Image (cartoon, rainbow over all chains, first blue to last red; front, side, top):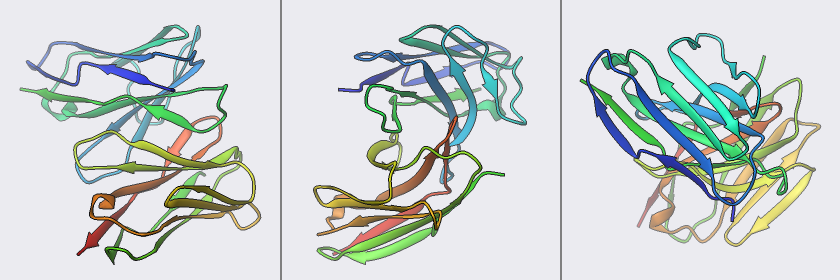
Length: 116
Length: 107
């Protein structure tokens, strides 16, 4: 149980375009989802906390107009990287809390974004 | 502020026992989680401690002392496949990760 599905697994896009990443909780309702960014050999950096039905809470230094987060339902959150640039190339990972389990959070497979 | 500290790397041999420590600082705390991440993959949930004491899950155990703001992950009967990065993370209003410990298991 506690399956989180993230799509796509990898994407290559041209500089200046936008990319949408989806995160779904498949067998539970996630009132809270987290979006992370990870560079090689580094830890997961929290970008924002997404709560269903309300605006996301962004971490300091994360541009909310560039990284648009929508959590429209209890099973789906999306991250849109707008006007992507090569420096946005990274591994993006979502996770979701399962309130029924009360145990931390479970992760999607991650999305490797390459901007060329 | 909020922070977690853990060693950057640990090396051990197959069959041994290794302990990865984690100290944290935060104003709001629900529990301490541990995750494993292999190169190129997403983190996998290992364990969670909300209360003081030891939680055992197979070869992995996790311990928490809230009064000391300290926890550890204990890995027993190490196998080569355990070579990975291990992260402690605390859950308050959000899930914050430590810098990770790279575990290398040698034959």
